Every structure is written in structure tokens, then in C-alpha cells.
Figure 1 (cartoon, one colour):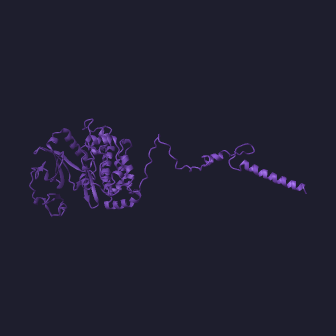
Figure 2 (figure 1 turned 90 degrees about the horizontal axis):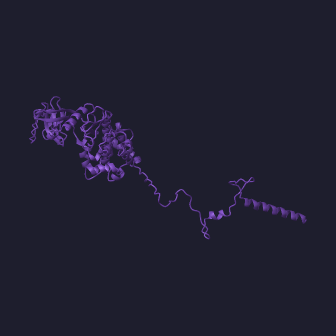
Amino acid sequence: MKSCRTCQRTYPDDAGFCPADGTPLFNTSLVPLASSDDARIGQKLCDRYEVRRVVADGGMGRVYEGIDRQTNTRIAVKVLHDDISKDEVALARFKREYEISSSLPHDHIVHVLDFQRDEVNKVWLLVMEFLDGEELRLVVKRDKFLPPERVIRMLSQVAIGLDAAHAKQFVHRDLKPDNLFLCGTHSGDIVKILDFGSVKDKNKDAKKLTVMGTTIGSPFYMAPEQAQGLETLDARADVFALAAITYECLCGQVPFTGTNGPSILLAILTKDPTPPTIAGKASPFGLPPKLDDVMEEALVKNPNIRTASVGALADAVGHAYGLPGDHRVWAMTPQAQLKVQVDEGRAGSMQVRPAPIAARDPFAAPQPDPFASPPRPTDPATGRSMDQAFENVRVQEYSATGVPQSGGFPIWLIAVIVGGVFLVTAGVAAFALTR
């Protein structure tokens, strides 16, 4: 292993320079640890995991970068806070996260390597693969709006990981930008889903770790059935959460807001989100009208009519932007290439949708029929329409059998013609008699 003398980060043996600050790397044994107030720096926990530097602090514990001296690989070590270590339910969740990790694919789910107690230091630790990058929360906070090609690639990778977990009856239940980690590469982000500690195991023999009536998850991204603590919660709760994350990335705001947790949950239970094309008007990337329908279906309150899977959600978002293919293709497509495809599909996907027809008020005055014939002229003397005037002199014509006919000559015209012929004939006869 090699380390950076400036930032103390560790890297594989084939690395030459630290990408964080550009300084040359040296063998870890030759790089002294920086002074720290944290007594764990430099320790070897469980006689195996060497602690190198502090990475982050969280509500559950402090995270360190370290080296697994048995495998000589970089690791992340989360040392649980003392109060968490005394919580039997919290410990059971960490243990379950470790056990579940072994049954999940790790292309887009963080690999949890170990969970055990260091008896010398009297601490519990969770060991994971080390990831270079940043949480989606930091990206959204910094950039506010994400380009659609980045969102689609990220969403597609998350869908692959989550669909695999759902196939094994695992529901994450705590999807939020903090639990999506973006590892930057030349082709674009490689996404890793974090924290399966709140997972709901739908298998019949799974041990229940949540008290009935309690809720787990971040309120901004919580599905209605999850907010109510319903036991019927399934994978479609993750669909709702991932749709809320997607909405935030594209629109620059969450779909449901409130001043505190209860007010946010009340909004989720009783209100409909603003359509993305309206909420995201300030986006520099533009939002296709079809995205309104996609978000409406994915954020619907009834899970029975919600988008069925996270894969289907990813497909719908990509197709709304006019992309060909599906999420499994987009997950592996370089972000620059996805941008070209989004730009090509923009002409068709960004067409303005006609305004919806408002529901008719049953008590409103009758509205003119736009397809009716224009009104007929009126007789200025009587004020009646010309149709009414002619109606009074119209003669119904009949055939010789008395059956009304449609078409043919009017009977009065026939009478005039016959009378004219008779007068002509009589005139000719009278002229002949005088000769």
C-alpha cells in the first residue's frame, strides 16, 4: 500500500500520485501519521484493521480510513458510538447489514466486510470497502440541479442494485441522497448504495427489529405507507423514495416540504407534488413534459397503482428524455455519450403539451359548441331567423303513394310547371280554332 504524506490517504501499490492534492505517493510504512487528538489513529483494531485517518462523523459512529493488514487493502472502519453500542436493537441492525451484504451483488451496493467487537478497546466496528468520491447529498447541495444524463446514469445503476435486493425480498426503507455514494470515473459516476441497516426483510423467517407503529427513514423521501408504519410495506416504498430523490436532482427541490417531520409526513399523506415542469422551471437543463406523468405515477399515494419497480422507474425517466434502450444499457453508457443522446432526443421530448381541459362546472351557463354551424341570419322586420320564416311556407312533398320523400322537386314547383303547360296548350288550341 502507498500513502500521501499531505492528506494521509492510502492507495494501491500501482498508484503514483495522490489525486486529491497531486503529491507523490510513498510506501505506507514510510509515511508517518499526522498528529491527532483521536487516540485511535495508528491503532490496529481487532489485531487486523490499522486506523489511518478520520473520514467522517455520523450519528451512529465515527468513520476512519484504514488498511486491512491481512489482505493489504483499503477499508473504511465505522466505530460505533458508546451509546449505540449499548443499544441491542442498533447492534442487531448492524449485524444484519453485515449478514445481508454477503448475499447481495456489490457492483452498486457497498460491500460490508466485517462486524465484530474489539475487546481490547471495548468498541464495536463495522468494516466496509473504501470508496473514493462523495455522497449525492453533497453534490445536490453544491450544484442544486443535476444534468439529466448524470441523473439517468445514476438512477439506472441504483435500479440494478435495488432490483437485485428486492428480488431477495429486502426493502431498503432509508433511501436518501446521503445513502447514495458517487465514485467518480472518466466515464461518469459509479454509484454505491449505502446503509442496509434499516432494511425490511420480507422473508417469512426474518426477525422483526422495528416496533409496530414506528417509522424508519428520512421524512422527505418516505412513502405514505411507510409514514403510516404499515406492515404491508414492500419494494414499492423504495420506488417512491427513489422517485423523490430523482425529482430533487432534476427540479432543485424535494416534492414534499414542511417545517418539521410531522408536517412533511402530513404533506406526503395529503398533498400532490407540483409537476416537475413547473417546480423545475429554473433548471438550466430543461424538463420534458412527459416527466410530469412519470413522477405522478411514481409518487402516487396508493402503492397498488404506483410504478411497479425501480427498474421501470429508471426506464420511464430515460424514455421521457427521448433515450432509446433501457436502464441496463444506460447504467454502462459513458455520461458524455448519454448527453449526446439526450440532446438528440430533446427535440421530440421537449414538445410543449397542450393545456389540460378543465372539468366542466355543472352549474355554469351553457357553453357554445365549437363545432356547431354558425348562426343563420335573421329577418330585420320580424327578428325571426330566416329558417323560421321559411318554415312557415315550406310544403312537405309526398310521393304518389303518400310517403314523405327526401329530395326531388317541391310540389308547388310541379304545380306551376303543370299549370304553365296547361295554359300553353289551351292557347295553342284556341289559336287553331280561330283559323
